[in-house]
Each structure stands twice: as C-alpha cells, then as structure tokens.
Image (cartoon, rainbow, N blue to C red; front, side):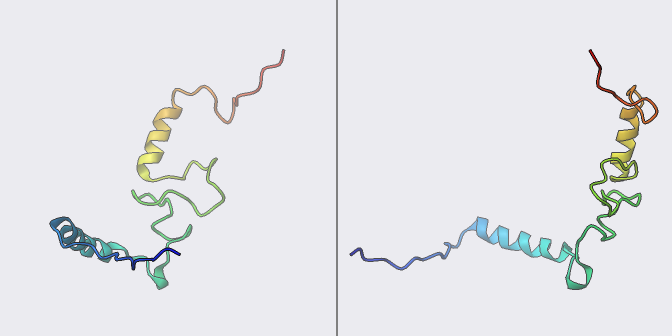
Length: 97
C-alpha cells in the first residue's frame, strides 16, 4: 500500500501575495450587497432606471423591452434602429415560394 504524505497548501511569502492581500482588502469594502441589501433582479442597482448600472426591468428576459439596459445601451440601440427597415409596424416575415 502506498504511503500518503500530508499535503501542504501554504504559500511561500512573496511580493505578489503581499500585493494581492492589499488589493483584496481594498476591493471587499466596495461590495455593498449584504444580507439586508441582496443583489437580485429587483435590486435598484440591477434595474434600468436611467443610470449606467442597471440593465433589466425586473420582468421576464426583457428582450422586447425598449427600456431595458443602461443609458449607454438605450442610446446605442436607438442609433442602430435608425437604419433598420424592420420595425413593429413593418416586421420581418418569412418569404413564401
């Protein structure tokens, strides 16, 4: 039977590990989603309410919702739709033979 050696998962002390610990300490306080402010589909930071954070509206998928997305998404979508000949009044239909 093979002899199993104990595994040692400790890391050697080095500059990269020290820098990572300092950066991690700076980043963790930025996470404001706690037990009382859980991140979900209806959290204010997830909702598209005119800011640059939220993307959804809290509904199902938001694929046909013109208000979904951050302000940059809505602006870009509107600029792309200008050249699209297919609109709700003139939808794309499958050609028949």
